[in-house]
Image 1 (cartoon, rainbow, N blue to C red):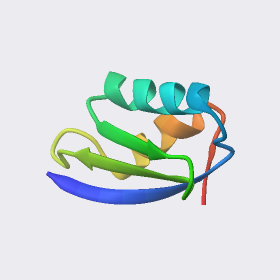
Image 2 (cartoon, rainbow, N blue to C red; image 1 turned 30 degrees about the vertical axis):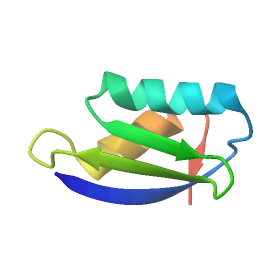
Image 3 (cartoon, rainbow, N blue to C red; image 1 turned 90 degrees about the vertical axis):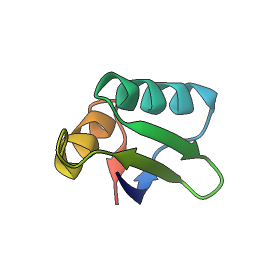
Length: 66
């Protein structure tokens, strides 16, 4: 398992948390949003998904990866 932190712009409320964490769960990634630091901590199996696909799942929800 790889753990990394992504800097994400545009998150401001619980709806943002639910959107991102839900989208990550759908692609098999454990994600934890921190609104205060504008980050998302992700844990994933690099044999099953790429960091690019994780970023795409977040961006599809309308947020920008810095």
